[in-house]
Length: 201
Image 1 (cartoon, one colour):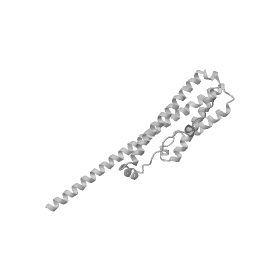
Image 2: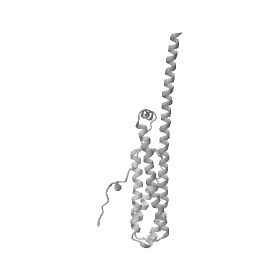
Image 3: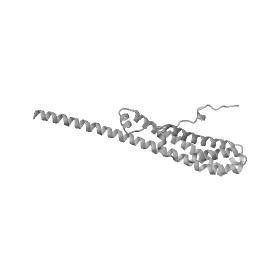
Image 4: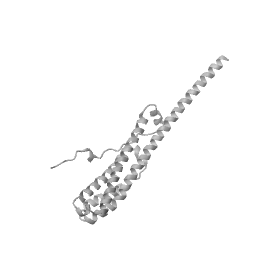
């Protein structure tokens, strides 16, 4: 009877221990899934702002064309960049697990930003355009959208960092490995932004 009690106690201790470990593992897994969903949600917010910018471009280009008809090179660059980005705004969140695809996506969006900056620089040569109320309203909306894009990209990087830290930490690293949870890529500054501008007086 004494041996049976001791054996039963050992089995009970093992069951409680395994239950505790299992509960901890399930809790860690659920935390990782919640973090992964946060990254996906923030990714959608970044895409929403990119889509908003994409929707503003035709009206902006149309307004500028009315004043600056001979700037066809700039209009072509913006149109090509928009067309390239048009198929690349709302893409599957799987791109977050593929660093090469994520970098390609970011380059397309950065190219569109650069084209828009060139378009806005052209408008500096046309005082009557800068006084046009429709153009001013569109320019304000575009600037606001660019700011929102920067904010959403930073928020994305913040949630991606929390997720990446969690999947690389012990013991969640083991659970992440079993669940095939991959590190997420970050948005980085464009190549042009990383070089100091040349200033001439």
